[in-house]
Length: 321
Ligand SMILES: NC(=O)C1=CN([C@@H]2O[C@H](COP(=O)(O)OP(=O)(O)OC[C@H]3O[C@@H](n4cnc5c(N)ncnc54)[C@H](OP(=O)(O)O)[C@@H]3O)[C@@H](O)[C@H]2O)C=CC1
Ligand SMILES: CC1=C(/C=C/C(C)=C/C=C/C(C)=C/C=O)C(C)(C)CCC1
Picture 1: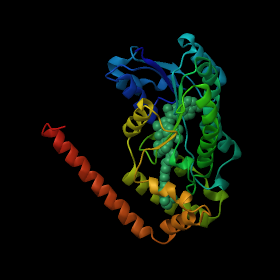
Picture 2: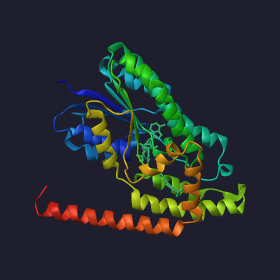
Picture 3: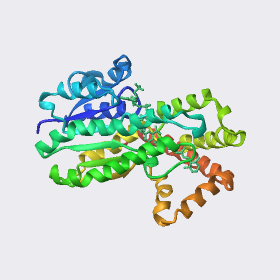
Picture 4: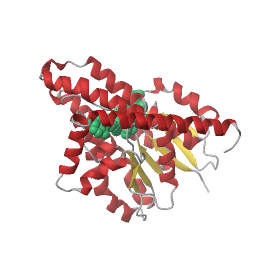
């Protein structure tokens, strides 16, 4: 069978880079990957990781999801504009009290995370409809399902993505002759530059525009908890690439797929109680009442994951699989 053309956005680092390389290195050679990034000056890491697949099963092209002209010129450069699988990965984070963020900065997050996805889908969907086939994948987030304090605008951008795709999936199912033509991947924390960038921004932010209590809650409570959550529950970009590949190659790809089983119970709270009380009470108590217990549990998870990693390394060294 001819390899499927896969276009991925945001491949200069993190999940996009890992996914592009994994698909390009596929043993069964099922994919031809168009790995895109907005700034080709950052292609070094991808080129290094792509190795011998570069310019064979992986090609690098410029694409900025905020720039329609760059999207059109990238899609037009593909023979017959034929994209079998579109993976919307490009995204930016934003944390902090909203009083410390300008409307322009907030619009920037929506422009990339939401309108970036809309622009990409608008450009490839008509061709997919004509061919009556295609798969649209979006790297959403657990924050597309649930709000997390001090992530107000980022969460709103991922909720927007989820609502957009949930609305689109039925039309796509009909037109692309397949009920599983749209898939949302919903990772919890993943250790990438995303985390480094938001902490860096938080360090350089001006908190004089909010009250001292809010500033203290953000810097001494949220940031501390968030760092603990990333180090205990954080997945690797490669983990997310593996999950995404499994979704893409499934006989009937799911519409939603969460990648972190430890995180899933937290996203289930709002469905267990439609009033929202269970979710808000649990989060409130986790942060303000049982924080010591939360940190002990997170530490236990960290130790268990460390032991599991060591055991896997040991098994590998002994030559078992
Ligand atoms: N890390 C995490 O904890 C989680 C991340 N996600 C989502 O995963 C996706 C990938 O993030 P991740 O790999 O973690 O973070 P990275 O910061 O490592 O990667 C983000 C990528 O998006 C690119 N990007 C940003 N803006 C644009 C744009 N306008 N046009 C094209 N590319 C752009 C970046 O390019 P450049 O280098 O030029 O900035 C970079 O290649 C995002 O959608 C994010 O929301 C979801 C759940 C958890
Ligand atoms: C669960 C949880 C917390 C933080 C979760 C975080 C920090 C999740 C990060 C997810 C990311 C980064 C998704 C990206 O798309 C708090 C508020 C500390 C305490 C209450 C429970």
